[in-house]
Length: 411
Image (cartoon, rainbow, N blue to C red):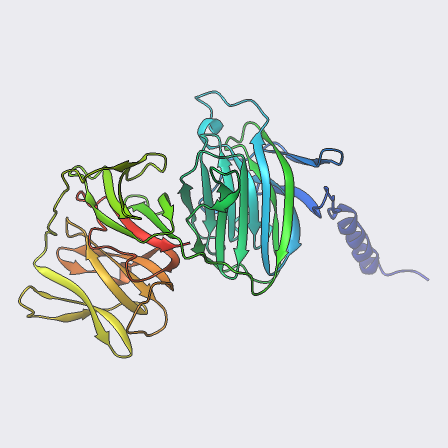
């Protein structure tokens, strides 16, 4: 029997596709590995069964913005999970002029899919001896980063519990403790969790060693929040990066800022602290408050939150209460804070209609531009999503130069 030519061609094409399909390459406890994105030089992943060490080598330009390039070794999972590892670079530190001198990176990575623009969260050690939580909330969206205040960089633990991600690092006692910076994002169904390395320089590759790698499936009712308080800051000029300044068991209240806006002073646990507001490694206890700025917003308007329908809305009025009007917002809005230069309005928001905020709600910190004294609600952006509420946005939230915003979260 003569096979029609179109059938023969179809069979040949299917056979070629099957032959070219990637065969899974298990590495230790992981199901497979490959380069994500398009690094110039291929990466590799291996496992030493005797020592339990995973060695991951990766190239790539970066893991940032809407595109990631790195080597990834993973296993598929679903539900709540915790993964921890000891980690360190084994390749020589790049030259000061090289792209990876400060920003080569690697650590525990959890991704919704294996596309280079996937939603993800990771716990990353960088070449500048800092740890950070990075995340992309939605596929194709921007990457955000939270710098973590710690000098102990050798071990990280990343947890996904419900819609929250948590990072733990070693404390002074050598045990793992939450580091602050937890945030909310949705990773649903099957996801991929494992180890990754990016060179931050597409002309080379970098290598990290991962030891004592442990992945634990957590129960559906796993405890997430600790209710510890965390002080964070975010820059107006760069809404993609935040810094954790302090984490503790006591409430935190911002006392004020230095006149130049570089230092923030806050109270917690009966003590007073001063910190460089954008340096997670520069916090000191002080005996008395220094001279603090007392900025007055450059505006003829007063902003407040007040009942609106079944929830709370934002309102503005003159100081005498006249010309009171409502400002359109998404969800219920609380605690509006106008920047000293009168150009920005930040506030807390929750999706469901509510008249009270509480202390541990799922909130969003949102920023609205104000142009020539007129709020621009259609240009509002979300800066961060976290567990917080009453007390998260202090009256002294703004630095006097309107460049930084301080806020308090519940870890």
